[in-house]
Amino acid sequence: MTATVAETLRPLVERLDPRLARPRDVTLRFWDGSVLPAAQGGPDPTIVVRRPRALAHVVHEPGELGLGRAWVAGDLDVEGDLERALRARECFRGVRITLGDKLAALRAARALGVLRPPGPRPPASEVPVRRGRRHTLRRDRQAVRHHYDVPEAFYRILLGPSMVYSCAYFDSPDDSLEDAQERKLEVICRKLRLSEGDRLLDIGCGWGALMIHAAREHGVRAVGVTLSEPQAALARERIRAADLADRCEVRVADYREIDDGPYDKVASVGMYEHVGEARLQDYVARVARLLRPGGLFLNHGIVGLGPGRVSPKSFAVRYVFPDGELHPVSAVIAAMERCGLEVRDAESLREHYALTLRRWAANLDADRAGAVAAAGSERERIWRLYMLGSSLSFEWGDVGIHQVLAAAPGGAHGLPLARRELLEGQPSSA
Image 1: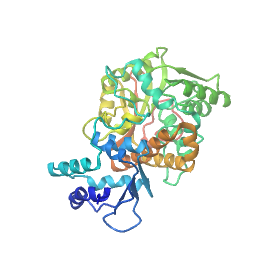
Image 2: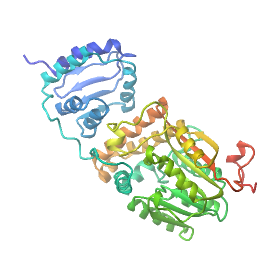
Image 3: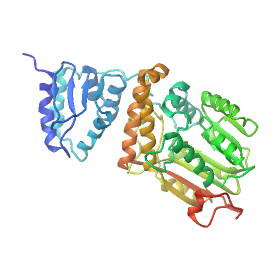
């Protein structure tokens, strides 16, 4: 009599379960209907292994990438609470995989027939490994367009009416996403002390939300740059609808191609993650050269909190942000100081981003069918996993996000004496 999949895998699971940090609270169900129940009773989520190909993905690319491939392809699914299933990762913290574990896994894989080379083909949405130098103008354009050249309808579902694709600023966990995003835009404007007639450069302007807010509420003249043609087209449309075309200009350009300074203020929101460690100093130096004496620069971006770099085999790099890199906030601050900029304020928004990602995940859940119709099943599955997985990474402190404010030397910066006034009142003339 042929053993079921569960029976074949049970020896491996029984080796691992006693060493987990806490009892395994997910059930495993396989394509033949056999089940490995959770270690304790309760309304636990069920990880459904729909096809042998799911295990083949994991065998041929162990870890995050193999699991991600199986998920994107639909070979691996979750019934019940996806977040609880993702939290099962905590069970494996500190667990060391021994030679005996590897041999047990090898025996099970051979018995199930999932060892045959070369392994299953990755899903179509995966970005293949690219050779050559990273962060050239051409390669950065390709990477950014992979992420942003997605049907507008998909992003409208994901982000909501604001179309702001960066961390919101919550006053309370009960705030709506739209209120928190509006507050974020105003926080940036106040930190930059924007006032009537200021010339603002928005690096990575997205769909134009910050430019529109700054021009409408603070009277600035704004230039925004993006590498995505569809994004630029929609930003221009939104600017015209707001009757601000005389104050806002959108360019399809790289930050390295901007040479029409000086600007009074520069904002870079959710962009510098694409810059790369090797280019970080040049990025800050270029911003510094574009600022007038006393001008202000606000850099808002995700930072690495743990040791090591983002793996080229991470799910985020292969499916979401090709060539993306995270730097410690100390690297950003050091680059600013080497360029002669004076760091005036740094604020962590880590908890804010966890809340933001949960709102985006809820938007996606509310219209999953619409998201699939707009961008396809693979893209919807990628973002569903990425949103919830990232929110947990921010909650756990694996990654963070900072707004760092710096001033150029040689002129009055206009910042207040008291820090509490940074987010209150009107810009001063100090």
